[in-house]
Length: 388
Image (tube, rainbow, N blue to C red):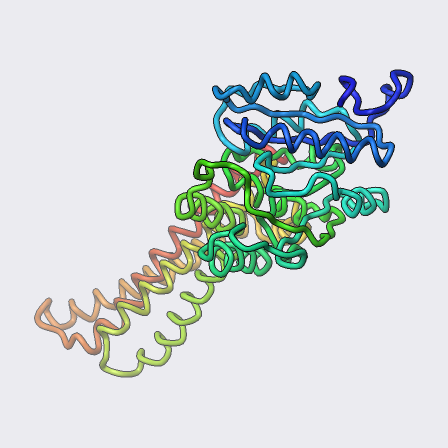
């Protein structure tokens, strides 16, 4: 049993807690007790100064009473959501290290040594990997095992170059101070992905250890909703990667638009030039979205500072943008005036579209890009005011 606030250590040693085991809880009366008991047993057997924190998210089934009877610290969390419960539990933790694990008895709280050893070696985040440790029959639905977790993890590794092979493992350990600096914000199941992504972007020391997943001990369905929560994970990964969401698609559109423009410009296929022009304009807009998103996220502390972006801003500023934008605008105006003069020379009569549109379409494209560059430069300067 725990001697609050520490676990199985004399009162004289409670000034320092090495480990806080945080369990999010929402109506887990069937399994919470066994999870607390296993955690207490582990702390006692390994002579670790620690505590157990139950972050309760509004239980009405007696979970709170069970936790209190077993001398676990109970943190009541009014804001709903897996992430909300964990953020409050982690904030209330007193240990140097935090081990978070679901309170459904699917993870073995008596086998935490691999996590603690890695933390003591200096790692900031130690992830459990269920695919390396083993998934027992019935512990994970086939949809999650063969599609959801592998695909979302693969996307996360691609977008962020993360070393983690199991983004969504519910058992993980970390240095409390290091994770507190990440300013985690998401309130739902995507909290699991946010922790991995931000730890990777901030270059924390990350490793993983094999973890076994067992069927949970509850008689009711889990809180997780496959498609809803899967989408929330995917949405978070995309929104946190402006490069893959905006920059790369935008650059591809610009490249394809330019290639097709130069390919079809000497030919009479002027209708195709319209699509080429649209690709260039939409591509440019998408690239600017990437820059806006990155700048805003950095200014708000959502993403760490990017040295490459700083170098770019040294050379590409408001003045450069105005020069480039006005140059494009002038080219567009010159082309438009030339097209108009050709029409005038023809007494404003019918023109050959194959010839005229090859002047008009590039001219209009330059006009549109010129205005976009000018106003985008102003907007980007507004975003940068906070950093000046």
